[in-house]
Figure 1 (cartoon, helix red, strand yellow):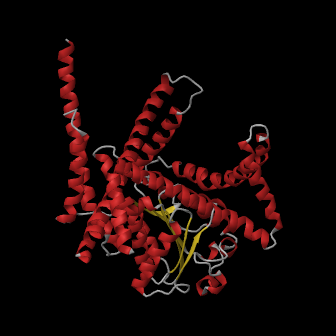
Figure 2: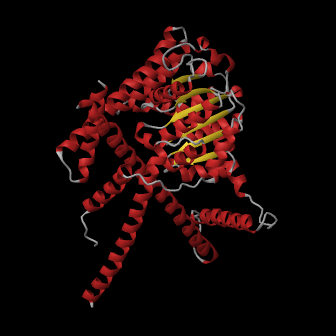
Figure 3: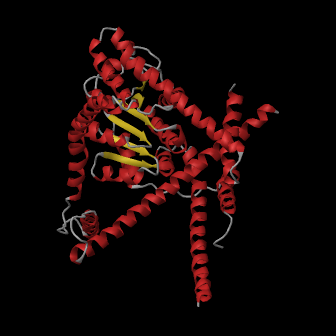
Length: 272
Length: 208
């Protein structure tokens, strides 16, 4: 058992991942207090307010972060919020923001420049986050496609953080820390965060201290939000495979330990 | 074009997955394509979003003072030559100074103080048994973990016992992190499999 070829484990994981897609079996998903409080915070926003959605994730974590961004936009566009998107991630951040936001805006009949704007990417996130406190236009003179902000009606009423009611940060890295330490701490803008599962344990500290109003941790967090807004998507589908793989991993850990202890007994006899 | 992109993505995904069977040339090709693309993209990105957008264009528009950071940036290149590498220390000192200045306040007010404040919990019991128990766990966990990282005195006696308690808290934290990491990695696999089944295999009927 100790010397099992790892490729059998890979095959078992592959089967566990593929099976739920071929034979869907809905499994119950509970909603954590962190996801609920984020939902409640967005729900409490006044209709039509200005909200920032930040795409701070790399293409490698699309599977976890994109369902969060999609669920957030469903909720915000339903409330007719004016959405300003940006990214501090050079690799694909602005284009992912463009693609996802436009796809969702189309679904809700929203118009670019009036209901949503994509500011794009600017190098040096510390300077960007600090600078937007004084003037967003000073940092982003144009939007992602080069249109001056002065030509976009939505940006007439948005000059700096004072005009932003809420920030929905979707992150797979430490940029979320700077949204907390620079934007939330210095300008008092409430922030909700959806992050990768790897980052979630670290972000829990910010929820506990009230610096994040709520937290969505990875695919599970995205699935929770999809359930809360009653819009089941990729995350809910993916969680079936997730649960099955987790059961498999638990079984493998148990088997591995049984094999180890039985082997240790045999090795001990051999020594005697 | 869209179909071509879809097939390219799928074949590169499968090429990378082939490593799980064993190391092979197809995997190596995919890996090198990925590394090359990343470097190429980064060079283009730095050129456009930093050199042109934040230095060259503003200087041409009359922002002459931006020559100063431009020169400081160029001085960093002196590190390539052993004889004059000391000149780059001017730029490095500037970077270290500004970074320290920016982060000292933001980190202190934005992270250190709020996190410390969040640890200062009431242990009086007036918030109910469950809340008080959680508060005790947090306080004991924070103090014992901090003591574990205190190396100015030998970990023996009371200090040693407390440090041992700290190790257990650290282990629990590592366990939580690892559990979440497994979930994260499985999520990424699910994402790729979802793409292969729904997008790639789902597009076969369009070709037939």
